[in-house]
Image (tube, rainbow, N blue to C red; front, side, top):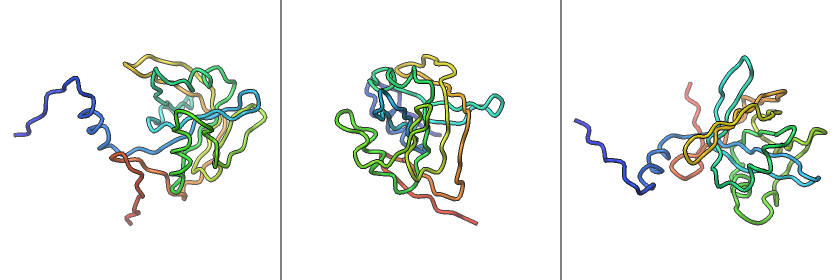
Length: 166
């Protein structure tokens, strides 16, 4: 019989369990007063085809999300294998998150990371409270995808590569 640990007040066990699930990594970015602002987010998922929605979960303590939330458009870049440094840069608490990150902006102010496997042009549809996070539902207005490009995968607190099995 499987024996489970009781959930304690120490969040390390829960983080360790969450780390067993591999996830892709996205960059959610926009221009603010002509300057790129963005963050890395691994809690990203497709939600709906009709209407076209994705979600991203953001910590309530994020200083970046309140700046991005009111933007007309947000660029969501699904990061590709080899974007490890860009992900780390976009995850920084301080400093220039875009140092060493090659990016491009649209006329609507969405910012995209070069070389991503997919780009999604989004706006905030709705936001839902969820514990110590918010679930932001983002409506997709346009996209570009390169399904043949390998994604950046985060698992067990490390970046990993996928192996194709035929």
